[in-house]
Length: 208
Image 1: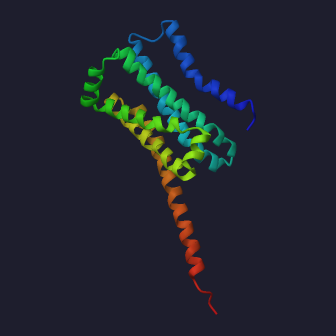
Image 2 (image 1 turned 30 degrees about the vertical axis):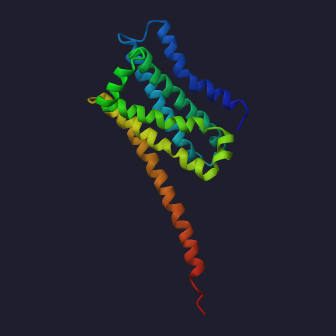
Image 3 (image 1 turned 90 degrees about the vertical axis):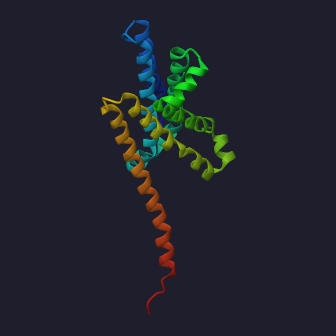
């Protein structure tokens, strides 16, 4: 991977935030700025979660193996925008009112799904370093990071339950996630079948 690519991708990942800040300074966030910020950061969170999940399939299909070097960055940006999304709710919407937030979590199912999606990302962000991979071991680290599928699923459910009426956009996210999950399941089934065939071939005696 060219050295210049990572900084360029990093800046591109910051572009949605820069655009949001620019709109804020130019009074272009609409009649309800908090809602605009909430929706924008939520969209970015889901987008980066799906981009992160897309890296491995794209790498295998295109054989562009350098793509794997960008996966951690995309995952961390998903967590970054998820944190901004949560802080918009906690700070700008609820003004750190813990009792009101707890009531929201208990009564409004889309809040519960959103909180679930965010908290599932925390261990992924905390263990995104090379040290964590060495400490946990490859298999345990990979097993832990499969939580991203559950986080993305909870995020899509959060979005569907939030909008209620116009489901076009959340269903688009759901469709992409479904394709990625099916791809993952097919890959898992193929990898399980391959050793079985190899074992069967070794056990079959040669005909005389």
